[in-house]
Image 1 (tube, rainbow, N blue to C red):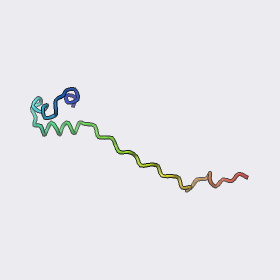
Image 2 (tube, helix red, strand yellow):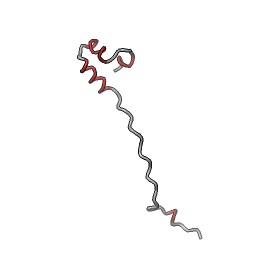
Image 3 (cartoon, one colour):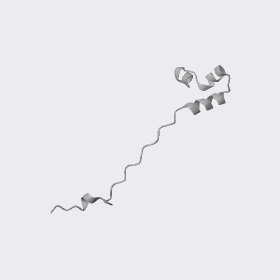
Length: 60
């Protein structure tokens, strides 16, 4: 993966350098690549007053 990041060679061009098939080089590159970032988190659920003591407190 470091060779791929530091050169302009494609994975298929790098395969002969390591003596493997292009498919094997691509599998290794995909395995070593960091996973994609997760999607956006869902918006928080609004508090509907369940268990909220502040709404029940009366100042008298």
